[in-house]
Amino acid sequence: MSSFSAKTDASDRVVQVQLIQHVRPSNIEDLWSNIPSKSQQRLEMDHYLTETLEKWATEDDEMNKFVQDTSKIQALVNQIYFRSLNLGIRCKQENLSNYEFTFVPEGCLSCSRPCDHNDCATQTCHEVPFDQDVHFLVVTLTVVCRLLTLTNSDKLAMLLAKDTDDIYDFYKNERRMDYDQLVAEPKPIINSLIGVLNNAQCFPKLCNLVVSTMSLTTCRRPAASLQAANVQLIPIFFRYLRTTRILDLLRSSCLIETWTGITSFLNIIPALYQFGGWKIGQESANFKHLITAVVVTLCHICHDYVKEFDKPPSLDKLPETLSTRPLISTLLVIDDADEAEEDENLGQEQKTQRPVSLRKDLLNKNPESFAIIAGLEVLGWWSHKGVNLEVHIPVTDGEPYDVPTAIQEYRKVIDDIIANNSNLAYIQPILESIIKREKSPKPRTSQSLLYGPLVHSFRRCGLPSCRKSAGDAGHDLLFCAACNGLEQYCSKEHQKKHWKVHKHFCKNNRISHNK
Image (cartoon, rainbow, N blue to C red; front, side, top):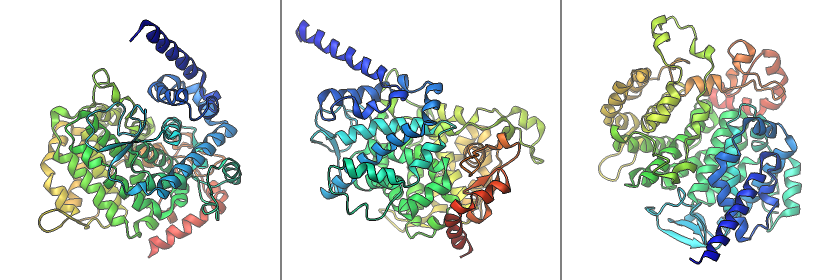
């Protein structure tokens, strides 16, 4: 390389960095309006944004102000809806959903592979022409996932889970193809993301981000999100677990791919946990298939579990894994009040000895152990809510076996994990009940990886104008019994005020529950 070209490259890099520094959350519209969409400069900026996102989008004050600005988050959601519809329709028209390989846009830094700069991919990769929608969605959904982890991101979650007239006015004016077939009747914004999952499986990193966005939204507003997505979410999640190469990634000898497989499973767990109260979804013919997909994924993690390798990759040695992170970590904060919950069966000495940081410590130090125990807790929560786990799992050789038999096969691995961390002993009665084909017990708030954070501490009052946590209210939130606890309230008064909005989902879920 000549000194002139080297200087030119360095100069271009400086320009790009300056652009990145300019695209603050307060100017987030620059993500889609500052640079011509099909230019090489636009492409490079997208990649640099993805690589340096942790540097420019982590100032809490700035991010918190952004998520409270309805006009800005509406503009962001408009763009996501427009781009995801565009990509989903195009992939469907070109029949890309049936391809068994990964597409890599020409000149791309591999943002559509499972992880950046990965040269040891087990999938067959094919180059396709430059696709700005893929790049745009990778960047913006990374931003959205970061925003959804903030405690005051309810406005964004609600926009993703409902339909609004201005969305349709926007993409009717901006459309690049005929959307008449799609706008015959309004659909919630989250449906456009489902379309990407259904039709763009050939872009696995994007699909991972879509699932993470949907999982965080569902965990933030369970009833609204599940009502918006409807039962079509069940087969889509099944397909994600079985056909986005998660199992191939888990079996890979490449540490980057294995880590991607683990995080792909971890990022869908929050949504799967909420399915425990979703009676409408459980009655779907595809729910049994989803159970098998969860169990098969869990068994593969157990099968390849090695204590010495149960740790996250080093960012110094494998910087490619920076953009592949377990977003569930942001949901694991639990209030001190919950940790100190009064429990007659738990002695004061045990309470004192129990570390408050168990969840994040385990995830940060032993992610495979976390994935295995969290997966078992999902199955236990489903069992506690009345889901029948005696589902047959197809195998390549021999007779099919059911979930209890599959879990029993890896009992020793699970016992070893518990032996290495006594705080995980809470999973033993859940494990025993699954194997014995009995209803699983409910874990304690202060002794669980998921139940405490996802059912208690992370939840807020269902009334949009309130959104108090249990800590804010000074007491546990009241569960809506009719919809199996998918909505919670700080008071009966607020439950009555929200009834006009909530009743449609609630009544349908209640009818399913009574059946």
